[in-house]
Image 1: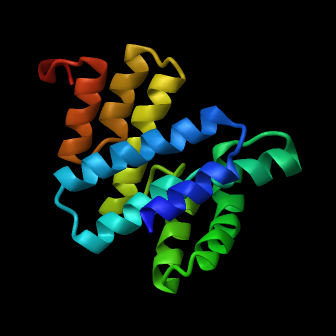
Image 2 (image 1 turned 90 degrees about the horizontal axis):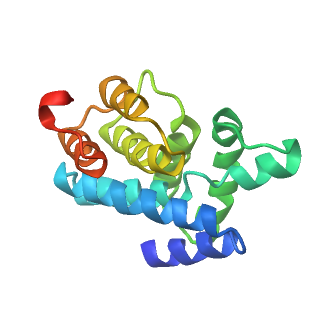
Length: 166
């Protein structure tokens, strides 16, 4: 199912290598963190699916508003994801959780569930790099956003932060 969803999302963002590479990287890091955090198998599956579709709201946001800010993605992403996941015959409960995570992946307070926390951390690791964030911004995200030990370790490794400085 993950492979099918990856193919559908690659097709969804056809001609947009930046977006395709982004969701592939977020998926890879979410998988990595989730496995290191020993998520139960089904929760890991739902996390990985959410990571693949987390930015699905970008296309309708750009089409309707000419921009794709985080709050627009949160609002417009769940209906798009629901259509795609329903067509792939996902379980309705899984669709609900995936859509919840899409609707909250740019909301950093009141994070409900370790799966959502991991999705946010994986997205941050990728966004900090893709945006060319300063080391101060990386350290700020580390302190304010990251909660899982695996996510913290990944961020330190990716950005070469000594544990003593984090």
